[in-house]
Image (cartoon, rainbow, N blue to C red; front, side, top):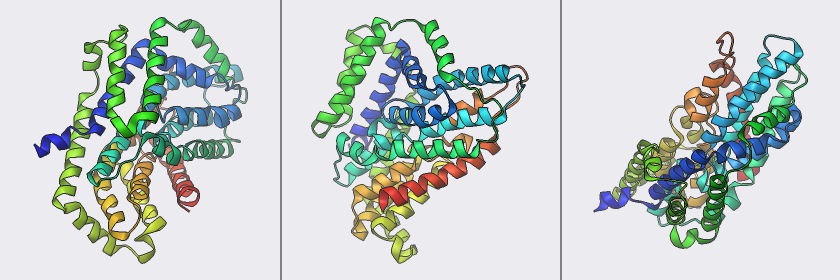
Length: 391
């Protein structure tokens, strides 16, 4: 009974519902429409960084960042090819690296914005419940969302400064390419309107009723509507990544086991004894836990990182007299900083796989590019989190 209860948490139902809802949005083509809407203002590289970057990051707080990146990356490759043809050159390494890495990094840092941003946040909600801590959708957004657009602007500033002399093709009009893509898609279909209505409804229910029905209740309710409206069928839901649902269920159960047996408290106590005094409580504990999480999330999935670190860091907060919400959110936020390696997040893998010259097959964005620029963005992410958010 205890094992079943540990698996069937609200957070597990929530992540299943989000994946199924994403299937409905993808099936109707609404994700492409959103991508086109976000890129419509990018008439120059400066506007791409300072307007599109924050818009994408905020959108990735509520929708699947993987779906957004998967659609937008090919459009940016078309933009790149058009720009080098216009400039009369065969390759512009600086331009393609800037376009694609800014895309994936801005999508990555949407994670702190809301609980709907990914399974890592759902896992943290489950860990909170193990220790009797309840946090609503609106409370999370109030604490996490301010970080997202600010960090996106920092990412944009980094690339605009670092690549100002490396880009050969100076005339880059992303909006023009987007308009051509939009003409191919045509007007919004009735199914897209239905999917958009369901998406807005679930966000409203999360904000207003999550304290009463949890995070899973509203999304399950809203999954009934696309079926009634004929947008979604069981075969569509059955095609979602069930292994991801099983992973988060297992992670939640392992976290519950650590909490129920006292193993998490023992681990936390052992770790606290190793830390210097100023990193054992308050903002110092947030700094140390976010750094550990940030390093780990570059080598393993964000959900698995939170599942491994969260059950230790939350009781560490309780033992040190620090708010478990602060330390838990610090852990969840830092799990979005998987910028350095291609394996860190599906966003990075999608961008890496698409960043190839269509005529020669040359890899335009390399693992070294991820490591060099990803490390810089990782350090900037920690700096913004520590200096602006914690202190």
